[in-house]
Image 1 (cartoon, rainbow, N blue to C red):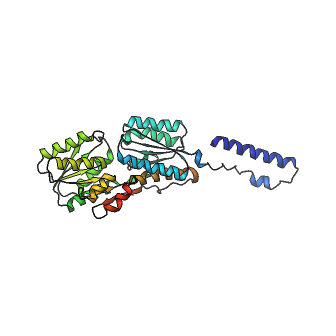
Image 2: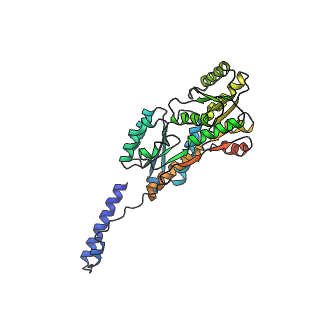
Image 3: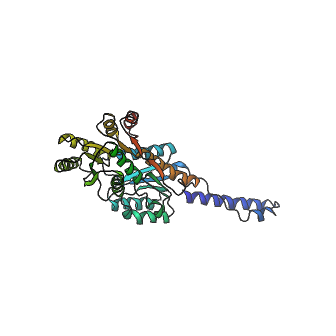
Length: 332
């Protein structure tokens, strides 16, 4: 579409010159003044703009449903062609990026749980002139790969806040449950939480694609380590399973979590979860698409070279009720 408009603009400019010459008008002075001017390209129509959102979401993960909802709403509000795809496998996610570029996408919004696996594809997209905004994961690598900005939370700040919340609860021995192997953002959360937590913290690996097995793993750890008095989960779906695991083995361990869905918000409101660290995924989807739109239509680079923080927001029993209503709408 852009090529057609440029051709039309060039034809129109040529027609204007021919018309001016045929009239015999005195154009001396104006020709010299305008000799360096170039015909401006017509602005791109919103309906002709394609923005691809490509994440590392696993099927059925409620967190990413909220990210997609935000991206969908931004696409509807702006009137653009928003296309959402995902794969938890870095190789497949890279292929999705490459395919979108080959199909002349106007911009990419990408989560980078495994930055090294996506680096080549993202750099190639940027080199091809496709603007990229990263969301959720990969905040440290985003600018180096050539992205405009990163929309998400600082996992370091969020993790440190979680550690302080665990201290406030008086806990001394906590397991930090990582549900996606190799996800740098999750590893950063546990490391940052451990840095401010006054007690002992050990990591426990589970699989977010098999929630029943994940719960069983948490139960086994609680039974094997009788002095564990806290569980820190890193995702909304795992949070519910952690609460269920504690109840199943009769443990007195308290549970806190990162990330929010409707169930998490209600569990916090009911006092079954100590807290939830909310990175506000709806904001990530919405601002990611909006940022690309502004780049394509107005040349804007949001963030000023720095990340745009979507969180963390700390949800406790005191403020959970106001979050529940939005979570039930699928936007928190």
